[in-house]
Length: 139
Image 1 (cartoon, helix red, strand yellow):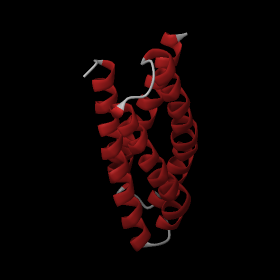
Image 2 (tube, one colour; image 1 turned 30 degrees about the horizontal axis):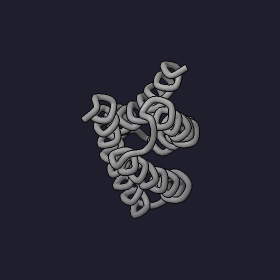
Image 3 (cartoon, one colour; image 1 turned 60 degrees about the vertical axis):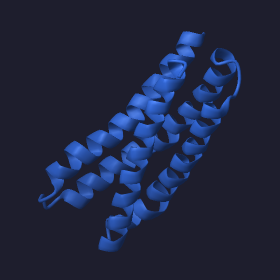
Image 4 (cartoon, one colour; image 1 turned 60 degrees about the horizontal axis):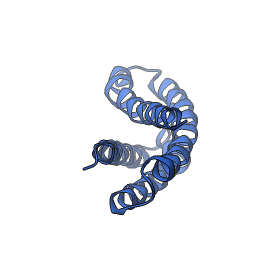
């Protein structure tokens, strides 16, 4: 059971972080000068938003709590720090996906806001991965 919880946690984190990297490093540059950029990018981001934000982050929260209770033996300072960072990422993600993102297709100002929120989310998520590795290694 413990292995299954960790497996789901790692797959959800891989999907979340990998999806953000793929969108920002592959899809966005590819579409930069294409006339269908807004339609395609909007559809891709909307689809990723459902699976990435709502499904992945939900699984990460549930499995993270499971890992903390059943594998780590309870909460300690580094896990509280990681949980706090998770809440920040969740707030940024919801703000990005439900407010700034939909408006970014129609406004350059919102496009910049959405871009900066996405960059912040990616950087914070990479920090979360690093923290998870340190916790798993007992550091």
